[in-house]
Image 1 (cartoon, rainbow, N blue to C red):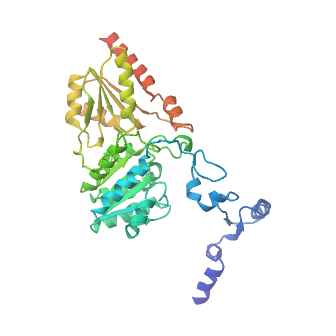
Image 2 (cartoon, rainbow, N blue to C red):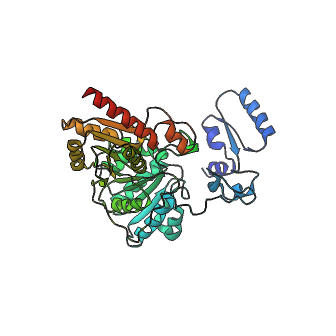
Image 3 (cartoon, rainbow, N blue to C red):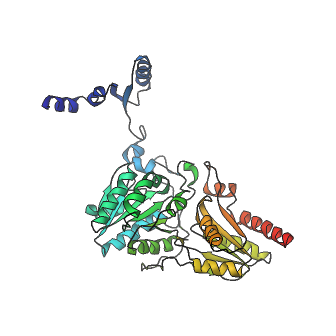
Length: 404
């Protein structure tokens, strides 16, 4: 046993060879000539082959070698220094606002712990780890493990906050249902990069979370209209004695003033931003601002529209929804999530289940994978810019008038 133990330490491939693999490596992944020779040789071998290649992220560019996490996904930067070229006066990002709010909440709540899966910088939890090193856990690229770890911590009386990119949280779907929701444990799930994320493309768009989260019993699901509301939603999620999720977009906020206090919101209650009109926008998250802009376009043409920040995808504000259905001739839902099973579907289900007959127009991500492009380009591509939304509403109202 001692001999085998020493051999496994000194010879990296022994484990794989015992499993029947031909092991080659480790080899220098930056030596292209050597790689070609090894791959050619591996093709001639019979049976399974495992090639162990070692590379350095950012190889050849010192700023990237020294800070590979900052160059994982990068915008414009100065090549001579590697520093990002940020616009002057730019509003803080949703990620940084979340990070500061969580640190502030943790001051008075020693039970708050933070967990991420290999993305401490990307999710904003690096600062939390520096402030509370014994309360921060990075489990590596293992979202499933992060969720089960959080469940265990919550069962032991702590309140874990898991920060993941929306697209990667899908990996922990099973653990979220069985380990967290089934036991109704106080775990807060913070989903960064929700919605369209631009040039990162279809693998990184976080456009499915509203659909799969609202299926789960005991789960509360929120989406803020701006960075200030994000702070209050985080406080609300942590105050809930059960599972709660807050999803927010990539990039800068709207630049709204941030208050000093962190307040909890009434769970399941929407916010009416504009009351006038005989049609109503019911919007969540980033689409609240788009709905306001679309309403302003329609108002110039004499079409008055109410605008509601629904805030909660689950539980829905059914009282307000019922009132809007009784008093408006058209309801319009808007979300930056797939239409299949999302917020608009929740509204449609409620209306159908309660026999409420009112025309409904849904805006969201269509049933296809969305390619790369700037967020502005992609929103226009799928008809989620205010002028495009206004045009579709005009068409629906015209159809309704023709059929009256």
